[in-house]
Amino acid sequence: EAIAEARQLRDEFQRFLREYEFGMREIETKISILQDEFTHMHAYNPIEHVKSRLKSPDSIVEKVARRGIEADFDSIRQEITDIAGVRVTCSFVSDVYRLFDLLTAQDDVTVRIVKDYIADPKPNGYRSLHAIVEVPVFLSTGTVMVPVEVQFRTIAMDFWASLEHKIHYKFSGQVPDHLVQSLTDAAEAAGELDARMERLHREAHDVNQRVIEA
Ligand code: 0O2
Image (cartoon, rainbow, N blue to C red; front, side, top):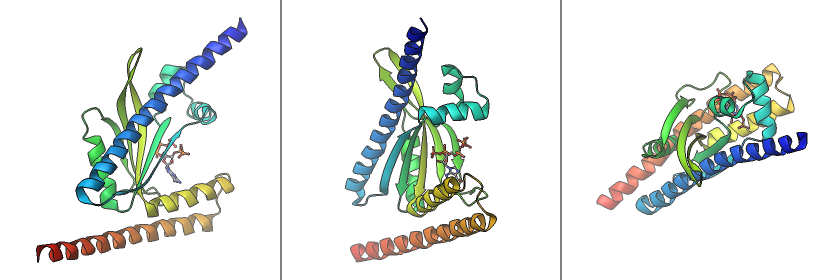
C-alpha cells in the first residue's frame, strides 16, 4: 500500500517536471529560430550561447522549505517560477534588449514578471535581465501553461555571475567583506566594458554603413 502510494507520487512528480522540460524546449526553439533568422536577415548573430537547466528535485524541495511553501503541486506551481530556466548570453547590451523584445512580443508568450537588473543592478553588482514568461505546451491530455525563467545577459555579465556564483559556494554564502567589495568593483568594471564594447560596435557599424553608401 505505502509502496504503491510512493510510486504514484514519484510518477506524479516526474510528470510535473516533464511539463517544465517541455516548456523549456519551447523557449529554446523560439530562441534558436530567432537566432537563425536574425543571422540570415542581418548577417549578424546576436547570441553567444544559450544554456538551459531544469531545477533539481533537491533544490525544489530546498526552496519549498526555505520559503515555507505548501508542499503540494499546485502551490509549487504557483510559487516556484524558476523550475525551468533558459539563459541567453549575448555580445552586447543592445542585443539583450532586442532578444527580450523579440521573444516577449510573440503571441503565445505571456510575460508574468520582468526584473531588469541591468537598469537596476543588485547591491552586489549582479546584472541581467530576467523575465518569467508562460508558454502553452500541447499535451495528449490537454494544454498546460508553463512558466519559464529566461535570463538575458552579456558575456561580461555572464563571466561575472559565474565567478560570483563559484565564490559564493566556496564560502557557503559567508564571503569575506573584501572579496564582496572586489566583486562589486569587478561588476562595475564589467558594466563599463559593456558600454565601451557597445560604442565600438556602433562605430564599426557606422563606418561600414558609410562605406556601403559611398
Ligand atoms: P540557479 O543555480 O541559477 O538556479 P530566488 O529565485 O528566490 O533566489 P528571486 O528574486 O525570485 O530569487 O529571483 P531573481 O532575483 O530573479 O534571481 C534568481 C536567479 O538569478 C538565480 O537563480 C541566479 O541564476 C540569478 N542570480 C540572481 N542574483 C544573483 C547573484 O547575485 N549572483 C549570481 N551569480 N546569480 C544571481 P538561483 O536559483 O539562485 O540559482
